[in-house]
Length: 390
Ligand code: TGC
Ligand code: FAD
Image (cartoon, rainbow, N blue to C red; front, side):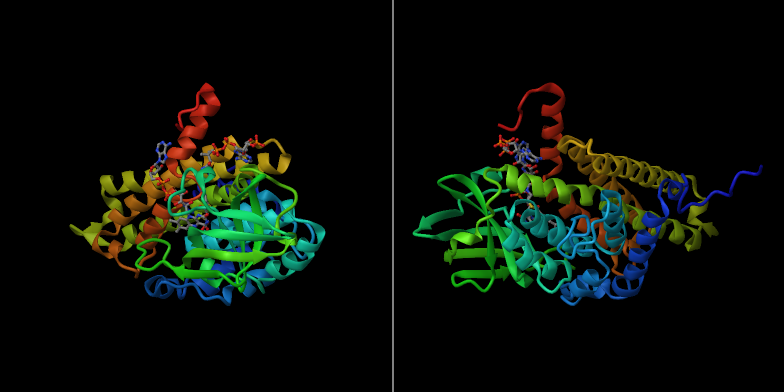
């Protein structure tokens, strides 16, 4: 039998590793990205915005909190959630960030650690994209080491009173609700903070050169008084926020392959059309070397992502496996983007092509949800037993 022709866009036949439901979901999200994100994303990136109405459109597609069960959530597998992240990020990491923060960082803590009333109040509306959430962990002086946070919650009768500042908060300025982590007498606790609470304010961070199609904000809590029912009752300590990060980091390690794939495909297409020295630049050995390195990186990264997704669905995944994927897939995606940028020459620095937009986005993806160094240290500790954080 003649072997099938080589497909530069699915070289290893990774499609064959997906079932029909997974392919359908992947194709649906890919179409949504083609229709609703790709035509305008360069303008959004330039303007530094992401239209709020995308929330309801993503909600209607079942993309928000999609891997959670019940409360209006789609209840998909981890692999399906990951594939959706890949497709959204192939549009722009800002769109994937929106879905990550909504589903994994804002809805997940309510779903996993909230009481029934909190779940009923927030989750269906958030799944539909009618209410937008954000996740406040990082502070101006507590980034990689969030357990040093200063934001505090003190009891006052039945109420809680929160004070502090959260920094670099995705969706902060457009959120209806913030899940805020704060020190209390019992340790770190999570609070559901409606953003119209007295004493709560936000200001958006401007002049970003990365993730421009995403709102990033500072949150200020100035004597924000909340009822006793605002606390997430089922978790105390860093396990709370770190469990949310496991969910979001998983989406990122699969999602990063969307940026990488988009850059590889843009470079491949461009290299076949761009003529220099009388022939397409794809015909030069040095260009082929770059394209082949990208091809290998994208396929290998996607294989790793699928493997980790299958482990998550099988219940055999440890957070250190997520660190392995986040560490390697994001750094590989960044290498692919930088190399693709060089293939496009001067055109590569413009917004006419997606490559430098992805490249700049990946600088944030490299840093958020645990920097490359933090995931290296998590893995280092896992294999040596030695703590090298401090
Ligand atoms: P440590 O002392 O090791 O542990 C404290 C407690 O937490 C438990 N734990 C975990 N639980 C669940 N999942 C994990 N991955 C966990 N890792 C640890 C641990 O068992 C312990 O539990 P208990 O019950 O014994 O108390 O924790 P540490 O405070 O020393 O922190 C370790 C370190 C440095 C790895 C952690 O702080 C870390 O990961 N730092 C990086 C910070 C980070 O990733 N921030 C992300 C902010 S959110 C964000 O970036 C969103 S971007 C969104 C977007 O736009 O997409
Ligand atoms: P720092 O922790 O100050 O690190 C600076 C450098 O020092 C890094 O290279 C780091 O790896 C290195 N370093 C730190 N400690 C060590 C060590 N022990 N050993 C070796 N090297 C070390 N946070 C939220 O809570 N919610 C959000 O929604 C959110 N969204 C974000 C969106 C964007 C666009 C960005 C850029 C960030 C976002 N963040 C969010 C914050 C993000 O999680 C932090 O930026 C990240 O955790 C790193 O913290 P930092 O920037 O303070 O860097």
